[in-house]
Length: 204
Image (cartoon, rainbow, N blue to C red; front, side):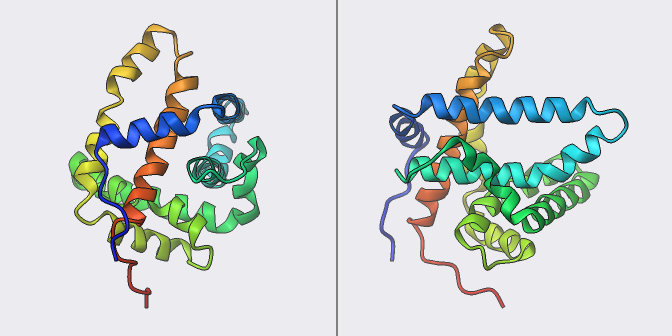
């Protein structure tokens, strides 16, 4: 049964800003950790890009854990960003499979690749909430959840373009605020979507 109406882009973003009050410091530190870690790893000669790819899944899951806890008003700590490493194999496989599928769709045309990315965008949130699911099952559940909502999510992402341009003017410093803002908004999109539709049927 539906428990919450679908929220507009403005409502999702306003909710994110309200939830970030008092937590901006931790959110910015989490963002810094991701930026610095990925930048340093990339600098490792010969194997940097490979290592970055390997840890991208666990880091993505850790970011999801932090911001889901934030928007749910649950206790959250900076070290939550590393929590994805406790589920290293599933999160790595989820990132790998998503990247492969998006790449294969992109071989057809750019637009199918973008649609594929939108289709799989809720997979890490689902993996956190349903740890019993495999990476492939999380992807399938994301496809079910995003059915009829991909355009909404695409427009939500586009709504941050103005802020992104301002970040360019600040030589990237503004990203320390924009990334938490976007991450909290995306977590709210997932939360709203989860509570605005009937639970998806069990995967066979």
